[in-house]
Amino acid sequence: MLLGFAGPFGSYPPLSAPVRYAFWIGMVFVGYAAALAAQKLVPETFIPRPQLRLGAAAIGSALPLTFVAAWVVPFVRPGHMYDPLQLPALFCAVAAVQFAIVFTLLRKSNPSPRPPAADSRDASGAFPRALLSRLPSRLGEEIVALEAEDHYLRVHTILGSDLVLMRLSDAIAAIEPDRGLQVHRSWWVAQDAIRQIVRSEQRSHLRLRNGLLVPVGRTYSAAVRSRTARLPLGG
Image (cartoon, rainbow, N blue to C red; front, side):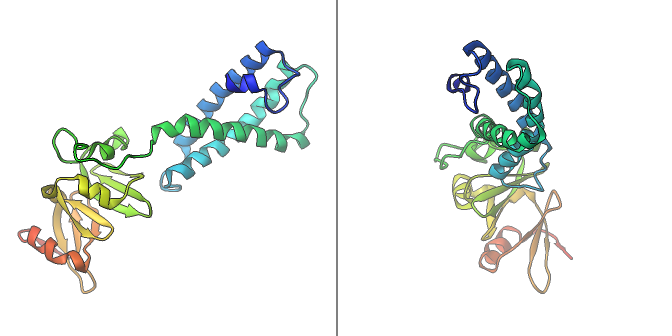
């Protein structure tokens, strides 16, 4: 409705108000569907940052929509045809709309987390709601480890991992202490996920129930030994 009112990219005054509103509402619906599909096709391992994935979805969906727009415009504006030399400029206009769609609609599925509060844990008191609510349902809620990655936090569950915008220190502060411990400046592990201690000349690691190997920092080695004294050693 906003685009129909504003009439950007030369849609006002050539298009009458009813045609202009219908054109933009239709293009936004198609653009949203295309951006959603593009977001699903962008592999998380290739672009791990959520904001960069949204940008890639906007650019990726703008390419096919450029040809859709070039095909639709002559129907609503007879006689106005696009030649190949005009397609780059049309792509820029479509990409601008796609960025607006992506960062106002798709971004809602990855909201910025609030600082965890004392009462922000789930019903069992194990993990904060601010953490669990941002995980995709495909990962479940069995968190085995947390890993700091710049300003993001990679949450490892028994089914996989994903990034959330949260500091490791904030996440640890919101989790009950007996649920796990920090074993490295960049790692926290769940107590019941530890299966084995793997020691080498360079560094010790903890093997978790999902097979993940987590390094143990020297600063945290004493605390780790006290919590894992009865676990078997591995090579």
